[in-house]
Length: 151
Image 1 (cartoon, rainbow, N blue to C red):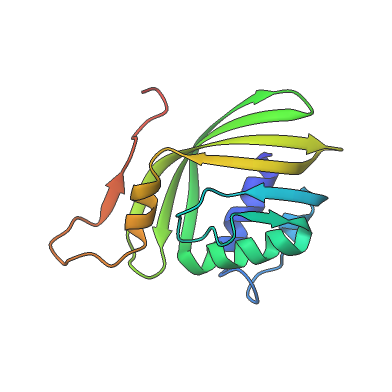
Image 2 (image 1 turned 120 degrees about the horizontal axis):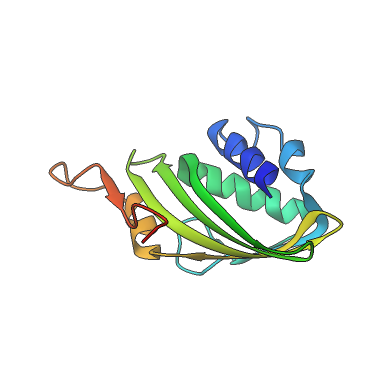
């Protein structure tokens, strides 16, 4: 999964659809991949994204919202079929420049070494949404949801 996360971060940093090659991301996804995103976040759209086309559309939307995503820490548990990944991630919103440092736990089903299904769970969805909304000038520039994985 590490190579998938690297490809995903590079895609987002390059600006997403029309600016970066999706092929590097698709190489780590099963053709029948399904992504289930939580409702209410600024990049979730329908909530369920299917196949390579659906994932590319999701990542295009995701890249419109986020300027960068940096994986600060990761822990993996599971076997060759099911993996749980705990990511500490720092996002920077394109519109506001706001940063959010948060945890995401993903339940991933794998088939033939590629992601088949993913269900991400965000530690603080409100902090994610707030980072994407313009803030008053006197507000701080970043939101820290959970600073370390040791907590």
